[in-house]
Image (cartoon, rainbow, N blue to C red):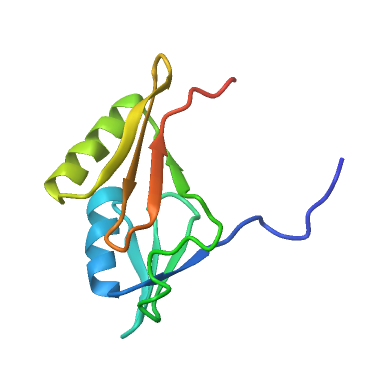
Length: 128
């Protein structure tokens, strides 16, 4: 059995144009809460999880560019959660890029955040 010397991926740091706008979007869509909030830096986490997203106001030319990362994803707890997030996205007038089902009962939705980053939310029934 292999052993890791880390706890795994701890956070992503993402360039944004406005941390306050980002806070409003991610708290509305995912229920994320503030860990730290400074003038040009924001750290959010999802209640009950160990994820951390760091948002930093950076050069506007960098904002929304993936730098080779195609998208990042959130796994929904229930299929209906994908539909609830879709409703929130419509309220926020977020751009929905694609949606459907990978398999029957496994819905997904791809959308862009306010800075243009592509995000996926999907439900996957895991074995066990």
